[in-house]
Amino acid sequence: MKKENFSSRWGFILAAAGSAIGLGNIWRFPYLVGQYGGLSFILLYLLIILFICNPLMVSEIALGRASKSNFVDAYKVIGQKLGMKHLKLWSFFGGWTAFAGITMIISFYYLVAGWVLYYLLESLTGDLLQIRPENLSATFDGLSQSFSTQYTCGLIFMFVTAMIVIAGVKQGIEKSGIILMPILFVIFLILSAQSVCLDGAEQGVQFLLTPDWSYWGFEEQGFNWNRLFETFVAALGQAFLSLSLGFGILLVYGSYLSPKENLFQSVKSIEIFDTLAAVLSAVIIIPAVFAAGLPPTSGPGLTFISLPLVFQQLSGGQVWSIAFYLLLALATITSTISIFEALTNLFMDKLKMQRFGAVVLVTAISCLGFTAVTASFSGVWGIKILGRNIFELFDWLSSTFTAAIVSLTIALFVGYSAMKAIIHNIRRSAVVTSRFTRYFLVTLRVLAPVSLGLLLFLAVYHTFGVYLFQN
Image 1 (cartoon, rainbow, N blue to C red):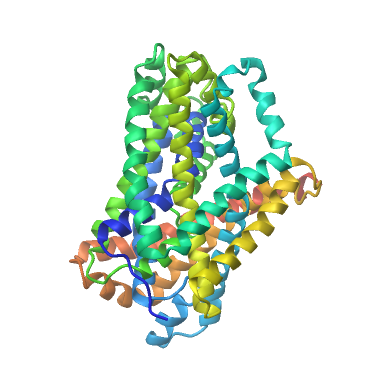
Image 2: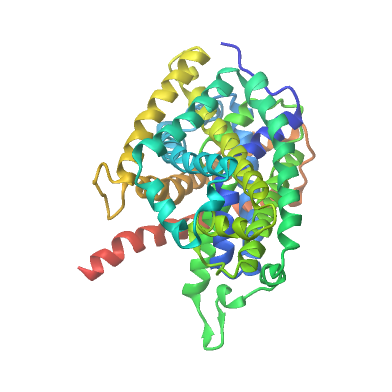
């Protein structure tokens, strides 16, 4: 079966940026900024992207481009050329762990996508702005307890995603990125301008521009390592989630990228688009929340509980409400497309399936996972594991463990075994200086493994260590 390819560098960039710009940017990033000191969190986030994520992103895309394979077999294809051993282990930790991660993500992502569609429809009808402020929390609680509403809205998103992926790389994925991404950023800019012009928004702008160094551990009583670790882990996890690192998605998109395209320039463009989207999301939400007299530390409820209150207080609130939830819906669909495509690519390669059959299989798997997640979250199915419902469990495992394990595998595989092959692939379209090679080696062999090891250790400790100590 002939391998599909993107028709242009910008087609790849917009598709990959669309994968990265999703709920992680618009829903998660602003409330983390609110919880971890505004500019302090943003600066740490940017440093992590520059010094840790950039080399990992280049490595993951280069792995795909060099192997022209799926995210499971890429290690085997490159490893065999280099005469490496233990290829099944590399494929297990780098490939099948990624499969577990994105299977869990696609199971719960449609639940949140369903909330987005529900709030968009409520905005279109004007009903969202008619809800009394004291009932906004109860409205979201009512939605979260309704299996049928959440399931129906999520299935609509799933159907649209499947139709786009069935159309293929050029006609489906690339074309949707080229159309949707400009619309996305136009809405971003309009809403950002509107938000900072609100009465009382200057406090939110000041919050975004003023660092609180206590979140970096610098406190009056002395240096607080726990505070720094907590902020670092939150920023590191957000950076990986935001850039779609460690899920196999970028590897698959890399396998569609022409060897003639400059990989450095492509990765730089993706990171700029993604970071700009994250920062603009914070600019939209944080000043608006301050203008409404709400705390920026409201957490995940900012998007679905606090913001509707903001829209109720705005002149032309329905228009801004529609624009925001349309923005969120577009960002969500560009992300679900990439997850769907990564699994479709795997089944096409491993099971020798045609694209249509592979998409049907991915849809079936997604439906099973989505059913379990929605039943658990809505209370229909009361099972809990480690004190978490299925939604919380899948979110926690995929964002904390599987992404970190896959990224750690990529860092070790490229840093210690496949460096020459990856550098050779990059050099086909870009100049690789000795300075970059040193930076690449230090990150992949030291910075990334230490950071990801710390993330995994703290996740295991806070889950099992504290539990065992208390018992």
